Image 1 (cartoon, rainbow, N blue to C red):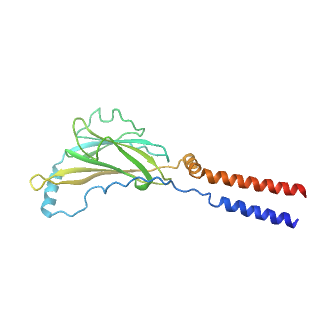
Image 2: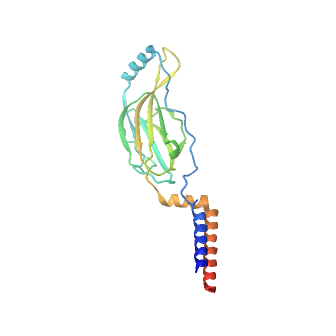
Image 3: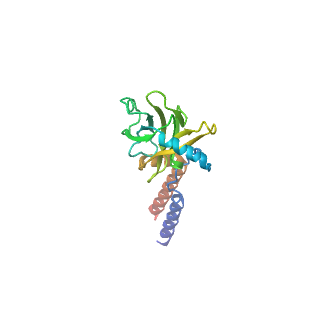
Amino acid sequence: MTVKIIITIVIFFIIIFFLTPLRYRESSYRMKLPKEFGYSEEISPEISTIIDMIWKKLPKGHIIYNPPSEMQIGVEERIEARIANRVSENLNRGLKGRGAPQSEEIKVSSRMSVHLDGGDAFNIKQLFTNEDQAIVGDYAQWEWDVVPLKSGIQKLNLCVDAIIETPNLSDRTYHVHVFERTINVRVNYAFQARSFFVRNWQFIITTLIAVAVAIIALLAYWAKQ
């Protein structure tokens, strides 16, 4: 009886040894962080005054954007933003993302900069265009394919700058922040489980074999008693 107890304890610790490393590890995928949005250097009072004057004269336009209200880990979503000098029927026509379009009034300049950022919680791929664009025709458009990588409440920020030129002072342009919105991401456990198995399949199979061998050995020993 004592031998059976000892063998059972030994097998128990073997199983614990193999199963202890089996815990969820966050995805190793990381996006390359984009450059910091906007400019942070100090400007002279003269330029500041000129920018303020230009800013006050900027007309009001509209931005439409369509981030989904919730996203799932590992599921790619198309997010689009359009900026126009005025509201038109074409502004939300032909959007590919599943999110409901939202429209808001913002100040606009002849050139705008739109940036989507989510830190290391998202893999964000900007499509077709640069962050800075001139508004030509009905609107200017930005598109991203976005894959959430982490669960929990994660911030995805949509930031918009008006690009202001000061031709009488210098050839430089200045970014003035005009708009920002955030969305959240929810957990997709199926993707987490699938990703965990893909990353650890060799260890999982080895553990299952070791446990099976230990159980068979234990049953065979008890059968002989």
